[in-house]
Image (cartoon, rainbow, N blue to C red; front, side):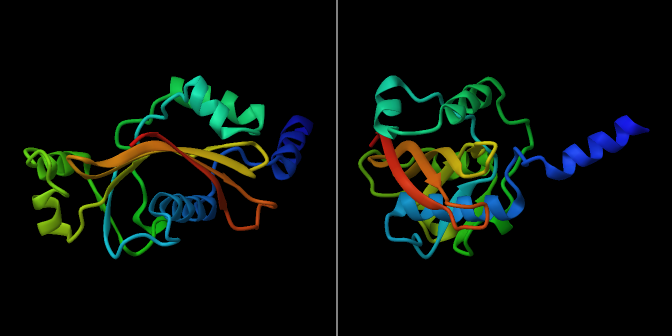
Amino acid sequence: MKAVIAAAVLALFSVPQAATPSDTRGINDAVVAAIFKDGKGPLSFVVRAEYRPMVKPNNGIVAKLGSVPAELFRKVEQAVATPPAPGELHAAANFPAAAHIVPGEELTMLVRGAPIGTNGYPALQEKYQTRDMLSFSRPVMTDDRLNVLVWYSHGCGSLCGSVGYVLLRRETITSPWVSTLLVVAVA
């Protein structure tokens, strides 16, 4: 009985290690704003429904990320070793209203065969009125819930897009997320 009470007290006062729904909404808003660099993004964009695996940053990316808690890199290593479960999906409520959450299989069909050198994907544009397609890893968060790293890919045509990382920070767990750095690995 004492062990059960001790565990309950410990759980009550311990800092959550996973992103809460409000963390996730704020994280997704900040990542979208960082990728589109205008604070809000286009009128419409597509998000791949399935989480993508976290990609381990190489030494050049780590150097560009600069002063990041070592704990975050340890958690990134864990995330790389633990890919998302099949069926683990983004929740539409965690994104701005402009986002269309679309299954990966459908996206593959919509972008397959897009002519080389075009600025966009005609089938995607026709169905969702956008050329912007985003994919994200699960957010990797420090135990204090003040630092987050997200891997992303942004496709906007056969010759348009980028892949990289967004580093987010906040002062307190109730503060909004702020993108402190967008590191583009491939553009």
